[in-house]
Image: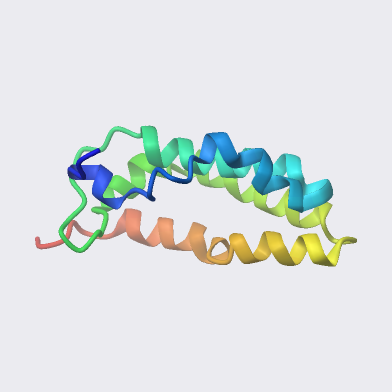
Length: 124
């Protein structure tokens, strides 16, 4: 597959999120259900959202792309799933450690989306 447009910024197709989700979440014990739903929602929004702009040469998203990909209701659902998985794992330190490792940037994600969504378009 030739990299063009959005595909240049995707992960290598050698790892297919939809085919490997259950393998990924099996390490999250009681938090597996919420972790699975969170991962699939994140991938689905990134892969299937129609954007009104293009990713720039540096791989940055325009503010409109944040609003389109991560509207407040989606961010709220993602945050709820992240918090649920953390709560479900509170008695399993090893599974919690693994979950937090793979979601390391999520704690600041809602604020980043809010700030980026409100920003002025780049280069203007």
